[in-house]
Length: 446
Image 1 (tube, rainbow, N blue to C red):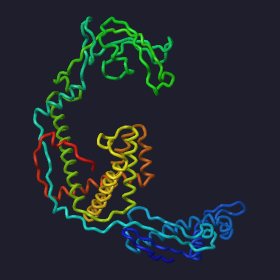
Image 2 (image 1 turned 90 degrees about the vertical axis):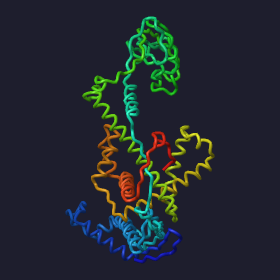
Image 3 (image 1 turned 60 degrees about the horizontal axis):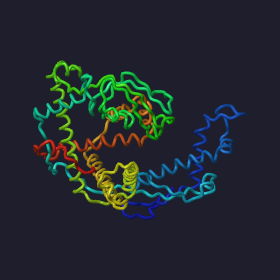
Image 4 (image 1 turned 30 degrees about the horizontal axis):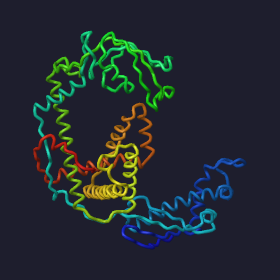
Protein backbone atom coordinates (compact mmCIF):
# COMPACT_ATOMS: atom_id res chain seq x y z
CA UNK A 1 0.00 0.00 0.00
CA UNK A 2 1.27 3.49 -0.87
CA UNK A 3 -0.09 6.78 0.52
CA UNK A 4 1.36 9.98 -0.95
CA UNK A 5 0.34 13.58 -0.33
CA UNK A 6 -0.38 15.33 -3.62
CA UNK A 7 -1.26 18.82 -2.42
CA UNK A 8 -2.16 20.88 0.61
CA UNK A 9 -4.12 24.08 0.12
CA UNK A 10 -5.34 25.83 3.22
CA UNK A 11 -7.44 23.33 5.14
CA UNK A 12 -7.72 20.90 2.21
CA UNK A 13 -5.31 17.96 1.78
CA UNK A 14 -5.29 15.52 -1.12
CA UNK A 15 -3.57 12.12 -1.04
CA UNK A 16 -2.91 9.44 -3.63
CA UNK A 17 -3.63 5.93 -2.30
CA UNK A 18 -2.61 2.74 -4.12
CA UNK A 19 -3.25 -0.84 -3.02
CA UNK A 20 -1.73 -3.48 -5.29
CA UNK A 21 -3.90 -6.12 -6.93
CA UNK A 22 -1.75 -8.74 -5.16
CA UNK A 23 -2.70 -7.31 -1.75
CA UNK A 24 -6.34 -7.28 -2.79
CA UNK A 25 -6.08 -10.89 -3.93
CA UNK A 26 -4.66 -11.86 -0.51
CA UNK A 27 -7.51 -10.06 1.21
CA UNK A 28 -9.97 -11.85 -1.06
CA UNK A 29 -8.52 -15.25 -0.17
CA UNK A 30 -8.67 -14.44 3.54
CA UNK A 31 -12.25 -13.27 3.17
CA UNK A 32 -13.31 -16.43 1.34
CA UNK A 33 -11.66 -18.68 3.96
CA UNK A 34 -13.43 -16.71 6.67
CA UNK A 35 -16.75 -17.24 4.88
CA UNK A 36 -16.21 -20.91 3.95
CA UNK A 37 -17.67 -22.49 7.14
CA UNK A 38 -20.96 -20.62 6.62
CA UNK A 39 -21.33 -21.27 2.88
CA UNK A 40 -24.00 -23.78 1.88
CA UNK A 41 -24.42 -24.80 -1.79
CA UNK A 42 -26.33 -27.59 -3.48
CA UNK A 43 -24.09 -30.62 -4.05
CA UNK A 44 -21.78 -29.86 -1.12
CA UNK A 45 -21.99 -30.54 2.57
CA UNK A 46 -22.54 -27.35 4.64
CA UNK A 47 -19.21 -25.65 5.30
CA UNK A 48 -17.35 -27.94 2.87
CA UNK A 49 -17.64 -25.92 -0.35
CA UNK A 50 -14.10 -25.66 -1.82
CA UNK A 51 -12.45 -22.22 -1.71
CA UNK A 52 -11.85 -22.42 -5.48
CA UNK A 53 -15.55 -22.97 -6.12
CA UNK A 54 -16.56 -20.07 -3.87
CA UNK A 55 -14.04 -17.88 -5.69
CA UNK A 56 -15.41 -18.92 -9.08
CA UNK A 57 -19.04 -18.40 -8.10
CA UNK A 58 -18.83 -15.28 -5.95
CA UNK A 59 -15.29 -13.93 -6.29
CA UNK A 60 -16.13 -10.63 -7.98
CA UNK A 61 -19.03 -9.93 -5.64
CA UNK A 62 -16.88 -10.65 -2.59
CA UNK A 63 -14.09 -8.51 -4.07
CA UNK A 64 -16.47 -5.53 -4.14
CA UNK A 65 -16.82 -5.86 -0.37
CA UNK A 66 -13.05 -6.27 -0.03
CA UNK A 67 -12.46 -3.07 -2.04
CA UNK A 68 -14.97 -1.12 0.06
CA UNK A 69 -13.39 -2.33 3.30
CA UNK A 70 -9.91 -1.57 1.95
CA UNK A 71 -10.89 1.98 0.98
CA UNK A 72 -12.27 2.56 4.49
CA UNK A 73 -9.17 1.08 6.16
CA UNK A 74 -6.65 2.95 4.01
CA UNK A 75 -8.57 6.20 4.32
CA UNK A 76 -8.44 5.90 8.11
CA UNK A 77 -4.74 5.02 7.95
CA UNK A 78 -3.99 8.09 5.81
CA UNK A 79 -5.85 10.26 8.32
CA UNK A 80 -4.14 8.67 11.33
CA UNK A 81 -0.62 8.65 9.83
CA UNK A 82 -0.85 12.31 8.87
CA UNK A 83 -2.48 13.26 12.20
CA UNK A 84 -5.45 14.83 10.46
CA UNK A 85 -8.59 15.99 12.25
CA UNK A 86 -11.23 15.71 9.52
CA UNK A 87 -13.88 18.40 9.24
CA UNK A 88 -16.57 16.21 7.76
CA UNK A 89 -16.62 13.13 5.54
CA UNK A 90 -13.49 12.65 3.37
CA UNK A 91 -14.02 12.57 -0.41
CA UNK A 92 -12.89 9.46 -2.29
CA UNK A 93 -12.28 9.64 -6.04
CA UNK A 94 -11.57 6.23 -7.61
CA UNK A 95 -8.97 6.42 -10.38
CA UNK A 96 -8.79 2.79 -11.54
CA UNK A 97 -11.56 1.10 -13.53
CA UNK A 98 -13.87 -0.53 -11.00
CA UNK A 99 -14.47 -3.61 -13.16
CA UNK A 100 -10.72 -4.17 -13.59
CA UNK A 101 -10.14 -3.85 -9.83
CA UNK A 102 -12.88 -6.30 -8.81
CA UNK A 103 -11.76 -8.85 -11.40
CA UNK A 104 -8.16 -8.66 -10.17
CA UNK A 105 -6.73 -7.02 -13.32
CA UNK A 106 -5.75 -3.65 -11.81
CA UNK A 107 -4.48 -2.06 -8.61
CA UNK A 108 -6.88 -0.11 -6.45
CA UNK A 109 -6.05 3.57 -6.96
CA UNK A 110 -7.93 6.55 -5.57
CA UNK A 111 -7.46 10.13 -4.51
CA UNK A 112 -8.48 11.08 -1.00
CA UNK A 113 -9.40 14.70 -0.26
CA UNK A 114 -9.79 15.66 3.38
CA UNK A 115 -10.88 19.01 4.80
CA UNK A 116 -9.27 19.55 8.20
CA UNK A 117 -10.30 21.33 11.34
CA UNK A 118 -8.22 24.50 11.69
CA UNK A 119 -5.55 24.76 14.37
CA UNK A 120 -6.27 27.47 16.92
CA UNK A 121 -5.99 28.10 20.64
CA UNK A 122 -9.36 28.71 22.29
CA UNK A 123 -9.67 31.53 24.80
CA UNK A 124 -9.22 30.67 28.48
CA UNK A 125 -12.73 30.84 30.02
CA UNK A 126 -11.27 32.17 33.28
CA UNK A 127 -10.21 35.32 31.44
CA UNK A 128 -13.72 36.11 30.20
CA UNK A 129 -16.05 38.64 31.83
CA UNK A 130 -19.80 38.93 31.36
CA UNK A 131 -22.78 40.85 32.70
CA UNK A 132 -25.81 38.71 33.46
CA UNK A 133 -29.15 40.52 33.22
CA UNK A 134 -31.51 39.45 35.99
CA UNK A 135 -35.01 40.47 36.99
CA UNK A 136 -36.64 39.90 40.38
CA UNK A 137 -40.37 39.27 40.24
CA UNK A 138 -42.63 41.35 42.49
CA UNK A 139 -46.12 40.60 43.82
CA UNK A 140 -47.73 42.65 41.06
CA UNK A 141 -46.18 40.43 38.36
CA UNK A 142 -47.20 37.24 40.17
CA UNK A 143 -50.77 38.55 40.40
CA UNK A 144 -50.64 39.30 36.67
CA UNK A 145 -49.59 35.70 35.98
CA UNK A 146 -52.51 34.47 38.11
CA UNK A 147 -54.82 36.71 36.11
CA UNK A 148 -53.56 35.07 32.90
CA UNK A 149 -54.61 31.71 34.32
CA UNK A 150 -58.04 33.19 34.97
CA UNK A 151 -58.33 34.36 31.36
CA UNK A 152 -58.01 30.78 30.21
CA UNK A 153 -60.74 29.66 32.60
CA UNK A 154 -63.51 32.08 31.61
CA UNK A 155 -67.11 30.95 31.88
CA UNK A 156 -70.34 32.14 30.25
CA UNK A 157 -73.58 33.07 31.99
CA UNK A 158 -77.06 33.26 30.45
CA UNK A 159 -78.16 36.80 29.56
CA UNK A 160 -81.69 38.21 29.48
CA UNK A 161 -83.91 37.02 26.63
CA UNK A 162 -83.87 40.51 25.10
CA UNK A 163 -80.06 40.75 25.17
CA UNK A 164 -78.45 40.97 21.73
CA UNK A 165 -75.32 38.95 21.12
CA UNK A 166 -72.12 40.88 20.61
CA UNK A 167 -68.57 39.86 19.78
CA UNK A 168 -67.08 37.98 22.73
CA UNK A 169 -70.47 36.60 23.83
CA UNK A 170 -71.39 32.94 23.42
CA UNK A 171 -74.59 31.76 21.78
CA UNK A 172 -76.23 28.40 22.40
CA UNK A 173 -77.57 27.26 19.02
CA UNK A 174 -79.25 24.46 17.08
CA UNK A 175 -78.45 24.30 13.37
CA UNK A 176 -78.90 22.19 10.25
CA UNK A 177 -76.72 22.80 7.19
CA UNK A 178 -77.68 22.13 3.59
CA UNK A 179 -76.01 22.44 0.20
CA UNK A 180 -78.42 22.90 -2.72
CA UNK A 181 -81.23 22.07 -0.28
CA UNK A 182 -79.70 18.71 0.76
CA UNK A 183 -78.42 18.11 4.31
CA UNK A 184 -74.85 16.85 4.54
CA UNK A 185 -72.99 14.70 7.06
CA UNK A 186 -71.73 16.62 10.08
CA UNK A 187 -73.80 19.69 9.23
CA UNK A 188 -76.29 19.47 12.11
CA UNK A 189 -75.92 20.01 15.85
CA UNK A 190 -78.11 20.78 18.86
CA UNK A 191 -77.23 22.87 21.89
CA UNK A 192 -73.83 23.91 20.55
CA UNK A 193 -72.03 26.74 22.37
CA UNK A 194 -70.31 29.09 19.93
CA UNK A 195 -68.17 32.02 21.06
CA UNK A 196 -68.63 34.88 18.58
CA UNK A 197 -65.29 36.08 17.30
CA UNK A 198 -63.48 32.85 18.15
CA UNK A 199 -63.06 31.93 14.48
CA UNK A 200 -63.94 28.32 15.24
CA UNK A 201 -66.64 28.10 12.55
CA UNK A 202 -66.65 28.64 8.79
CA UNK A 203 -65.63 32.25 7.97
CA UNK A 204 -68.65 34.54 8.04
CA UNK A 205 -70.84 32.27 10.19
CA UNK A 206 -70.19 33.95 13.54
CA UNK A 207 -70.50 37.50 12.16
CA UNK A 208 -74.05 36.80 10.98
CA UNK A 209 -75.14 35.91 14.54
CA UNK A 210 -73.98 39.20 16.06
CA UNK A 211 -77.07 41.13 17.10
CA UNK A 212 -79.23 38.02 17.44
CA UNK A 213 -81.16 37.22 20.64
CA UNK A 214 -82.76 34.18 22.27
CA UNK A 215 -85.53 32.70 20.14
CA UNK A 216 -84.26 34.14 16.86
CA UNK A 217 -84.26 31.86 13.85
CA UNK A 218 -82.24 32.74 10.79
CA UNK A 219 -80.58 31.25 7.75
CA UNK A 220 -76.83 31.72 7.85
CA UNK A 221 -75.32 31.56 4.37
CA UNK A 222 -71.59 30.86 4.04
CA UNK A 223 -69.15 29.48 1.48
CA UNK A 224 -66.83 26.64 2.47
CA UNK A 225 -63.12 27.37 1.99
CA UNK A 226 -61.29 25.73 -0.90
CA UNK A 227 -59.43 23.54 -0.10
CA UNK A 228 -61.47 22.14 2.77
CA UNK A 229 -61.11 19.01 4.93
CA UNK A 230 -64.19 17.53 3.21
CA UNK A 231 -63.49 17.70 -0.52
CA UNK A 232 -67.21 17.33 -1.32
CA UNK A 233 -67.94 20.66 0.39
CA UNK A 234 -64.86 22.63 -0.72
CA UNK A 235 -65.81 25.94 -2.32
CA UNK A 236 -69.57 25.30 -2.08
CA UNK A 237 -72.23 27.65 -0.68
CA UNK A 238 -74.15 26.28 2.31
CA UNK A 239 -77.18 27.48 4.23
CA UNK A 240 -77.43 26.77 7.95
CA UNK A 241 -80.94 26.98 9.41
CA UNK A 242 -80.02 28.28 12.87
CA UNK A 243 -82.00 28.80 16.06
CA UNK A 244 -80.57 30.83 18.93
CA UNK A 245 -81.52 29.18 22.22
CA UNK A 246 -79.80 31.69 24.49
CA UNK A 247 -77.15 34.41 24.56
CA UNK A 248 -74.42 34.06 27.19
CA UNK A 249 -72.14 36.78 28.54
CA UNK A 250 -68.48 36.25 29.34
CA UNK A 251 -67.67 35.93 33.04
CA UNK A 252 -64.18 36.42 34.45
CA UNK A 253 -62.95 33.60 36.66
CA UNK A 254 -62.83 34.33 40.38
CA UNK A 255 -59.30 33.66 41.63
CA UNK A 256 -59.95 31.92 44.96
CA UNK A 257 -59.47 28.57 46.72
CA UNK A 258 -62.08 26.92 44.51
CA UNK A 259 -60.26 28.16 41.41
CA UNK A 260 -56.97 26.71 42.75
CA UNK A 261 -58.62 23.34 43.30
CA UNK A 262 -59.35 23.11 39.56
CA UNK A 263 -55.56 22.75 39.15
CA UNK A 264 -55.35 20.05 41.82
CA UNK A 265 -53.97 22.39 44.51
CA UNK A 266 -55.28 22.78 48.05
CA UNK A 267 -55.94 26.52 48.08
CA UNK A 268 -55.10 29.89 46.54
CA UNK A 269 -51.86 30.19 48.54
CA UNK A 270 -50.60 26.92 47.04
CA UNK A 271 -51.58 28.05 43.54
CA UNK A 272 -49.83 31.38 44.00
CA UNK A 273 -46.66 29.61 45.21
CA UNK A 274 -46.74 27.29 42.16
CA UNK A 275 -47.27 30.20 39.77
CA UNK A 276 -44.43 32.15 41.42
CA UNK A 277 -42.05 29.19 41.10
CA UNK A 278 -42.94 28.69 37.44
CA UNK A 279 -42.62 32.41 36.68
CA UNK A 280 -39.24 32.68 38.39
CA UNK A 281 -38.13 29.65 36.37
CA UNK A 282 -39.05 31.53 33.18
CA UNK A 283 -37.04 34.54 34.34
CA UNK A 284 -34.03 32.35 35.14
CA UNK A 285 -34.27 30.66 31.74
CA UNK A 286 -34.43 34.01 29.96
CA UNK A 287 -31.47 35.31 31.97
CA UNK A 288 -29.46 32.26 30.90
CA UNK A 289 -30.46 32.72 27.25
CA UNK A 290 -29.30 36.34 27.38
CA UNK A 291 -26.03 35.34 29.03
CA UNK A 292 -25.48 32.55 26.52
CA UNK A 293 -25.96 35.02 23.67
CA UNK A 294 -23.38 37.33 25.25
CA UNK A 295 -20.97 34.39 25.63
CA UNK A 296 -21.36 33.33 22.00
CA UNK A 297 -20.91 36.92 20.82
CA UNK A 298 -17.69 37.19 22.80
CA UNK A 299 -16.35 33.85 21.56
CA UNK A 300 -17.12 34.88 17.98
CA UNK A 301 -15.29 38.16 18.51
CA UNK A 302 -12.20 36.57 20.07
CA UNK A 303 -11.60 33.82 17.49
CA UNK A 304 -10.58 34.44 13.90
CA UNK A 305 -9.37 31.54 11.78
CA UNK A 306 -9.99 29.94 8.39
CA UNK A 307 -13.19 27.92 8.22
CA UNK A 308 -13.60 24.58 6.42
CA UNK A 309 -15.47 25.59 3.22
CA UNK A 310 -17.55 22.40 3.04
CA UNK A 311 -18.72 22.81 6.63
CA UNK A 312 -19.79 26.38 5.92
CA UNK A 313 -21.55 25.35 2.71
CA UNK A 314 -23.43 22.54 4.45
CA UNK A 315 -24.56 24.86 7.24
CA UNK A 316 -25.58 27.54 4.76
CA UNK A 317 -27.55 25.02 2.69
CA UNK A 318 -29.57 24.02 5.76
CA UNK A 319 -30.28 27.64 6.69
CA UNK A 320 -31.10 28.65 3.11
CA UNK A 321 -33.57 25.79 2.69
CA UNK A 322 -35.43 27.04 5.79
CA UNK A 323 -35.37 30.62 4.53
CA UNK A 324 -36.78 29.61 1.14
CA UNK A 325 -39.51 27.52 2.78
CA UNK A 326 -40.52 30.48 4.95
CA UNK A 327 -40.43 32.77 1.93
CA UNK A 328 -42.74 30.48 -0.08
CA UNK A 329 -45.12 30.28 2.88
CA UNK A 330 -45.08 34.08 3.26
CA UNK A 331 -43.59 33.82 6.75
CA UNK A 332 -40.39 35.85 6.32
CA UNK A 333 -40.10 38.64 8.86
CA UNK A 334 -40.77 42.15 7.62
CA UNK A 335 -37.10 43.13 7.34
CA UNK A 336 -36.05 40.03 5.37
CA UNK A 337 -39.11 40.25 3.10
CA UNK A 338 -37.83 43.58 1.76
CA UNK A 339 -34.43 42.15 0.73
CA UNK A 340 -33.39 40.57 -2.55
CA UNK A 341 -32.27 36.95 -2.60
CA UNK A 342 -28.70 38.15 -3.14
CA UNK A 343 -28.82 40.32 -0.02
CA UNK A 344 -30.48 37.55 2.00
CA UNK A 345 -27.88 35.04 0.85
CA UNK A 346 -25.08 37.36 1.95
CA UNK A 347 -26.64 37.84 5.41
CA UNK A 348 -27.34 34.17 5.99
CA UNK A 349 -23.94 33.08 4.76
CA UNK A 350 -22.44 35.25 7.50
CA UNK A 351 -24.71 33.49 9.98
CA UNK A 352 -23.55 30.11 8.65
CA UNK A 353 -19.91 31.16 9.08
CA UNK A 354 -20.62 32.32 12.64
CA UNK A 355 -22.30 29.04 13.54
CA UNK A 356 -19.46 26.94 12.12
CA UNK A 357 -16.85 29.09 13.90
CA UNK A 358 -18.69 28.88 17.23
CA UNK A 359 -19.24 25.14 16.80
CA UNK A 360 -15.49 24.60 16.33
CA UNK A 361 -14.61 26.87 19.27
CA UNK A 362 -17.07 25.18 21.63
CA UNK A 363 -15.87 21.74 20.51
CA UNK A 364 -12.23 22.69 21.11
CA UNK A 365 -12.97 24.22 24.52
CA UNK A 366 -14.97 21.15 25.51
CA UNK A 367 -12.18 18.83 24.42
CA UNK A 368 -9.58 20.75 26.40
CA UNK A 369 -11.81 20.63 29.48
CA UNK A 370 -12.50 16.91 28.88
CA UNK A 371 -16.26 17.38 28.73
CA UNK A 372 -18.12 14.12 28.21
CA UNK A 373 -21.71 13.23 27.36
CA UNK A 374 -23.10 10.21 29.16
CA UNK A 375 -25.29 7.56 27.57
CA UNK A 376 -27.94 8.46 30.14
CA UNK A 377 -28.00 12.08 28.92
CA UNK A 378 -28.40 10.95 25.30
CA UNK A 379 -31.12 8.51 26.35
CA UNK A 380 -33.03 11.27 28.14
CA UNK A 381 -32.79 13.52 25.08
CA UNK A 382 -34.02 10.67 22.87
CA UNK A 383 -37.01 10.05 25.16
CA UNK A 384 -37.83 13.78 25.28
CA UNK A 385 -37.83 13.88 21.48
CA UNK A 386 -39.97 10.75 21.25
CA UNK A 387 -42.59 12.25 23.58
CA UNK A 388 -43.26 14.93 21.01
CA UNK A 389 -44.81 12.22 18.80
CA UNK A 390 -47.52 10.55 20.92
CA UNK A 391 -48.23 7.00 19.78
CA UNK A 392 -44.98 6.82 17.76
CA UNK A 393 -42.49 6.89 20.63
CA UNK A 394 -40.97 3.47 19.88
CA UNK A 395 -40.52 4.25 16.17
CA UNK A 396 -38.75 7.52 17.03
CA UNK A 397 -36.37 5.79 19.45
CA UNK A 398 -35.61 3.07 16.89
CA UNK A 399 -34.94 5.75 14.27
CA UNK A 400 -32.26 7.35 16.45
CA UNK A 401 -30.78 3.99 17.40
CA UNK A 402 -30.37 3.10 13.72
CA UNK A 403 -29.13 6.50 12.50
CA UNK A 404 -25.80 7.67 13.96
CA UNK A 405 -26.09 11.07 12.25
CA UNK A 406 -29.50 11.72 13.80
CA UNK A 407 -28.13 10.64 17.17
CA UNK A 408 -25.23 13.07 16.74
CA UNK A 409 -27.77 15.86 16.27
CA UNK A 410 -29.19 14.99 19.69
CA UNK A 411 -25.73 15.00 21.26
CA UNK A 412 -24.67 18.37 19.81
CA UNK A 413 -26.96 20.65 21.87
CA UNK A 414 -26.19 18.67 25.06
CA UNK A 415 -22.47 19.18 24.47
CA UNK A 416 -22.96 22.88 23.67
CA UNK A 417 -24.92 23.50 26.88
CA UNK A 418 -22.24 21.72 28.92
CA UNK A 419 -19.52 23.95 27.46
CA UNK A 420 -21.64 27.05 28.15
CA UNK A 421 -22.13 25.83 31.74
CA UNK A 422 -18.37 25.45 32.08
CA UNK A 423 -17.76 28.98 30.80
CA UNK A 424 -20.36 30.39 33.21
CA UNK A 425 -18.67 28.50 36.04
CA UNK A 426 -15.15 29.71 35.24
CA UNK A 427 -15.73 33.22 33.85
CA UNK A 428 -16.29 36.33 35.97
CA UNK A 429 -20.05 36.99 35.97
CA UNK A 430 -21.54 40.22 37.29
CA UNK A 431 -25.30 40.36 37.81
CA UNK A 432 -27.21 43.47 36.75
CA UNK A 433 -30.85 44.04 37.75
CA UNK A 434 -33.10 45.11 34.88
CA UNK A 435 -36.81 45.48 34.26
CA UNK A 436 -38.82 42.69 32.66
CA UNK A 437 -39.01 44.37 29.23
CA UNK A 438 -35.22 44.66 29.05
CA UNK A 439 -34.76 41.03 30.04
CA UNK A 440 -37.15 39.83 27.35
CA UNK A 441 -35.96 42.22 24.66
CA UNK A 442 -35.35 40.30 21.45
CA UNK A 443 -31.81 39.54 20.31
CA UNK A 444 -30.67 38.64 16.82
CA UNK A 445 -30.19 35.10 15.52
CA UNK A 446 -27.71 32.93 17.41
